[in-house]
Length: 132
Image 1 (cartoon, one colour):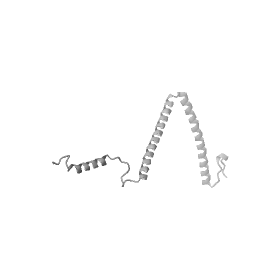
Image 2: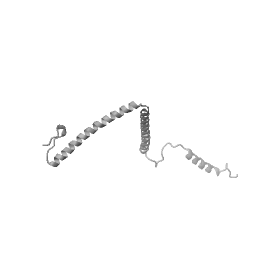
Image 3: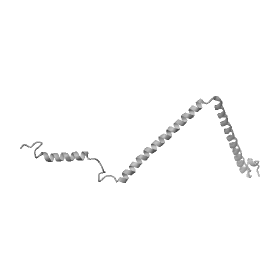
Image 4: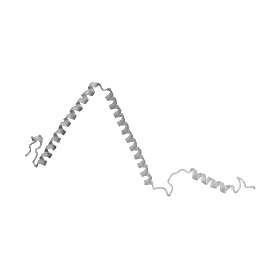
């Protein structure tokens, strides 16, 4: 009998081919024996998930900020001249109030420095600005 595909020599070769096919198609149900422990896999999974969530959260925050800026710009463009003037006048009065406060503090500081240089005790200008 000739040795062909159905002969005696074909049986070991067929078994070897079948074994390799089973190994190639076999589903991965568990990691190989030398693979990483399960807890490491879980740590990596949670890490990647948290990075993805934080990226989404940060991106949403950026979007909200951009929308807010666009809305404010649109409101500025739509507001009339009188409204803009009123807002600028309010801002000016607030800045002038700040300026007078800072000027008073500066005058106190200069007075104290002068009194210290002259060897005298200085009482704040808020109390009359007298030297002793």
